[in-house]
Length: 226
Image (tube, rainbow, N blue to C red; front, side, top):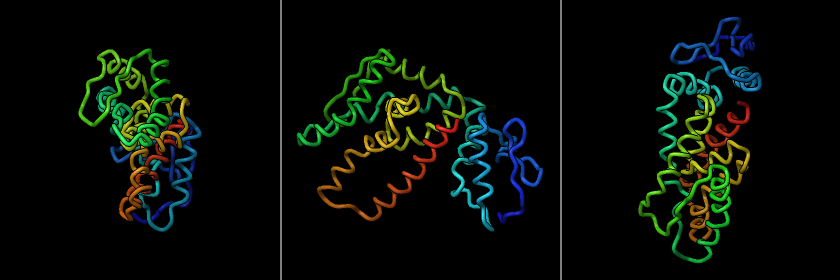
């Protein structure tokens, strides 16, 4: 789509307009945000469009569209999809060897689990290996309740963080300011970094990681603006 507008304005109610005409989501719902900070950031994406609109260069707009069109109609179902990561969280499954990797995982992952234990009064059962190990039912339920309590915009923001990191626990820690975005990113890539240090980096793997980082950072920024 070629750019057809000259002026981007933030409207009352934190809506967005192009030359006075309201912007709508792909589902034809008016695009609006819960905070002024978020809609201003989305407006900047629209102001920064060149001759042609590229949705990939407008991640905040994309997440807002998702919150409105995909999450808001049935937030419970969307939350349940994210909560499922709490049943097989990355942080539960540890290397058996070498000792240096075991220690590195523990250093990155144990503080996140310790936080969740205190925050939600739950118990985790980390295991060595990759075979599925069921966590206590009460733990899974409590994590699910924490996700279900989030609104549509926060759920949309957490979605890329959870799916990219593979950790619901880490994403919740980020959402509650108990962990930094960089700490969560590093925790999600402990194993990958270990392999790269020993065998070198694959060009395609590096490109894929860079693409994931863009989506991860967009989710983090969106969450902060909400």
